[in-house]
Image: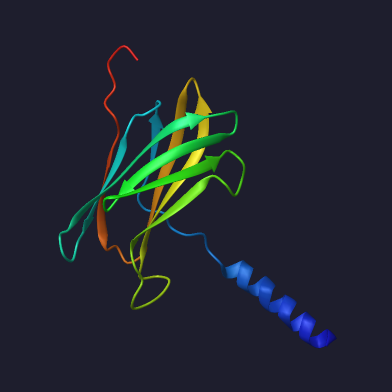
Length: 145
């Protein structure tokens, strides 16, 4: 039993030594005031289908924020937090049919910070096979802000 434990620990150490973090490409940060909409335009290269992921925040207390998103005409309502482990939402864009988990496309929405009545979000796209083109649309700002 002891040899099995040592062998298992050795495999875990070797696996973590060669593990690499995911390559989020592209990535973009949004700074939004209350009820301002941010938009991520996603175009699938194979079929040229254009889809839109919209999101906004509506309520913030000292650590928690309420976020609404719309993707494929389905509204979602989520609570995110500044606490680690509660600050990220994952939206599957394309499923992974052929070679899971490297075949699919995912959008990660992360809540980063809240200062001066503005929330900062980061959108990361995990697209290993380069199946989509992405465009980020931030809300328009007036010049006196």
